[in-house]
Amino acid sequence: MNTVTHRIGGKPWNGESARSGDVYDPATGQVTSRVDFADESVVDDAVATAAEAFASWRNASLAQRSNVMFAFRELLNARKGDLAAIVTAEHGKVLSDAAGEVQRALEAVEFACGIPHLLKGGFSENASTRVDVYSIQQPLGVVGVISPFNFPAMVPLWFVPNAIACGNAVVLKPSEKDPSAANFIAELFAEAGLPDGVLNVVHGDKVAVDRILAHPDVKAVSFVGSTPIARYVYETGTRHGKRVQALGGAKNHMVVLPDADLDLAADAAVSAGFGSAGERCMAISVVVAVDPVGDELVAKIVDRVRVLHVGDGRRPGCEMGPLVTGAHRDRVLSYVDAGRSEGASLVVDGRSHAIDGAAEGFWLGPTLFDHVGTEMSIYRDEIFGPVLSVLRVATYDDALEVVNANPYGNGTAIFTNDGGAARRFQNEVEVGMVGVNVPIPVPVAYYSFGGWKDSLFGDSHAYGPEGVHFFTRTKVVTGRWLDPSHGGVNLGFPQNT
Ligand code: NAD
Image (cartoon, rainbow, N blue to C red; front, side):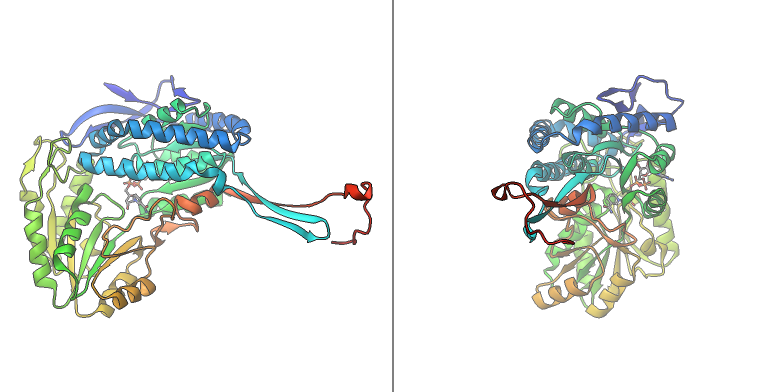
């Protein structure tokens, strides 16, 4: 059996792990690897290695850092098919989805290639007589990155390129459910010329996370995962004096106004609701149909859902794969029962959808509920699976009230042909990322990604300019030099300036 182990100081760890976990191929239900779980001493080793590497990496020239990033970009581009295959093998999403994930990761790398420009400070000549003031952006030191299962390549690459381009050293703790992508990324960085120890990967669970959060030499933590763990990571990390950005879960609404193009809206609801089996933090999980579009919109969604090709993501033509583990599939299944007993109409039952894959895979077909109420658990909870709810409301104002009353605020979308209504929505909605006739409004890499309310703890969004801000601290220098034209004599300087 293949073993996935830590990478510390540029090489695989060679110790004996007391604890480990199973890694599955979700399309077959088979265990394909074991992943070592780090105890505290492994995390301590990784942090010490990173701290040693940081001492020289922080002084690497901007040219050297951007050269590494450009080389990494070329390698990743050349090997993107391999990385996508690793993602599909352990996560289950279809290959085209995995390729899309790697493409978005590449964009974040490309942003970090511009680090010399991004780290330019400000300069004020003669702030006082012959006194200049300037600012510099310096790295923090060792930073931790803790990532979720659903984007095992993209989410680490939201953070790692900016962190190391800014001069930090990183300890990455990916999800234990699909750990291999992180090691592949670390190997490519080594090949790109990143010095040993600047990027380390430790695998594991809460034990590793808790040690990263408490370790005195870890200066900052970027976390992505579910809301309860994000809140815990934020509170624990900040209590230990660290800078923390913790991105949490979501319940994303798509509002469809009466004047919307309903074919466009139905296509969007299906791709954003069931793509990646609904295991996306920007998935649409609630369609809010404003009267009178409900019946027609639901009929169009049903037509599309019934013909979705669900199966092994490696098979050509498959549009939706399995869920990541059997336990997660069972949890999502429990919501199909809950929705029925709570009184929602089960319009499409994913349990009877045809599956193009091995019987033991972690399958659940696309499931659609209509007439969902905000008091139901299928509305309140983040299900994180292929279950889409339709909620019917009378007016735009009712729709806005529903979206704003929800505790999550990651993404949302409005479908309309009325520019005024769209503009009003973008102004009034309390959500961090808003789409207008775009169902999954993930910002491009030169903006930053982040939700509001329970979808993000901390004040910096991920990647883009806010990522550079998060991974650096500002120093302001106030300098006075004697003027050689006055023989180096300090003539006429005012005191107390
Ligand atoms: P998760 O919270 O279970 O795990 C995330 C990370 O935390 C993993 O590395 C895991 O090992 C670790 N972890 C799990 N339990 C822990 C505990 N008790 N203490 C300390 N660490 C712990 O999330 P997941 O199931 O891997 O990912 C899915 C979740 O992530 C969904 O809620 C989804 O919405 C969210 N997500 C959010 C975003 C975003 O940008 N806001 C992006 C992707 C995923």
